[in-house]
Image 1 (cartoon, rainbow over the protein chains, first blue to last red):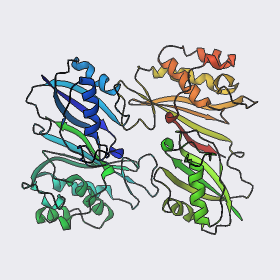
Image 2: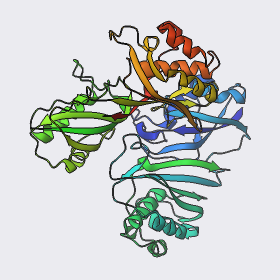
Image 3: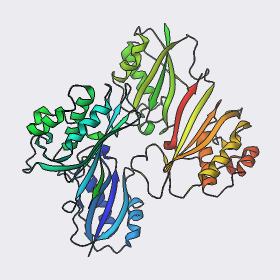
Length: 247
Length: 247
C-alpha cells in the first residue's frame, strides 16, 4: 500500500463540480479521475481532494491523493494518467509519493485562488469560459486598495454563502491583490482557508468597488459587520480558479 | 437597402465550420449568425464571409457582410447582436456601413492567420481548445528561420490539401514569423490569400523543422517541389485562428 499525491489541472466548464454526485448522469471531476485510476491501478480507487470546487470552477493546481497497491514508478504516473484516457479538459501535472497518512484536504496549509474578470465593452469568445465578463469600466486601483482590507485574520461571515453550516468563520488572508493584463483583471487571494463561496463573494464585492458603487474603505466595514447582505453578489463560477495548494 | 460589415470573433470548437451545411443538425457559425440576424432584422439575412473556416478553427477577426433593410443605427449593431441571443462562443466586435457592392470575400486584400502550438511535456487543460499540443521539444529559432522561405510569391502547391480543385496555386506571403510566449508557440502568416489547408500544412511542416526531422533550408526545396507529399502533416484544426482580414 502506498499513497500518491497528484496535482491536477482542469477546465471545470463541463463538470458538475469536483465531488461525485448521487445522480450518476452528472459528470464530475472526481468520478472521471476515480474511473480512470481504478482502471489503471486495476483496483477501486477513491481520491481525497484538497478543495472541492463547485460546478464550472476551474483549477490549475488542485491536489488529490489516493492509497493504492498500484506498482507504477511514481515518475510515470502523470504520463499514464494523461495518455490513459483522461478527457482533454483534465490534466495530471505532477505526482509524488507521500507518507501513508498524508491527507490532501486536512494537511493543506494555504490555498491560492484567482478570480478572473474580463473587463471590456465587448465580450471575448476565447475568455468567456475562464472569466466573468463585466462591460462597465472598473477602477483597478480602487479594487487593489480595497483588497488590502482583507489581509490578516478576520471573521469572514460577511463573505460566506448563506446556508453554509460551517461554525468557525475566522480565516487568515496572507496575500490579496488585483492586477490587470489588458482587459483581463485578476484578483488573487492566498489564505489558510476559505469559507463557502468566499472568493466569489469577495470578487463580487470588489467589482462593486471597481464600479464605484462601493468605496475602497467600505471593505473594512463590511468585514466588521459580518453581514452577508452588505457584501456584493456571488460572482459567477467560471471566473474562479484554484491555483495552488501549499502543504 | 444597406450593406453592413461586421467583425466576428468565435471559438470554433463546437461548430462544424463557418459555412452552412446541408445537414441541419450540424451547427455552423453561418447558421447561427443568419438565424440571429434574420430575427433582429425581421427579414431573411444571408451573410457573405471573408474566409470559410473549417470545423474547429477559430477566428478573432473574421469579417462578414450582409445586405438588409434593417434600420438600426450602425453603432448599435454590435450590442444588438451580442445581447440579442448570440451564444457566448460567438461575439460581434465591430460594425460599419459599407458601399452596397462591398463583398467580404472578393474585396479582401490580405489575411492574417495564426497557428498556436502548446509545446510542453504536459498538456494544458486551458489551452487545449485553442492550440495543438506537441510534447517533443521544438527549436523555435529553426522554425523562425525556416518560416522566412515562405516570404514572397510562390506556387504553394506543396501546401495545398490533396483534393482541392483550385487551379491557381500562386500566393504571396508578406509576413511569416514564429514567436514563443512560455510554452505557447505562435506561427503568424500574412498573405494575399491561402490555399485550402495551407496554414495547417505549413504549421505541420514547421513542427517537423522544430523537431529536427527537417532542416530549415528544406523549406525552400519543399516549396520548389510543389509536391504535397514532401511537406509535413496537416496540423489539427484547433490550433488555427483567422486573426484579421485587411481590405
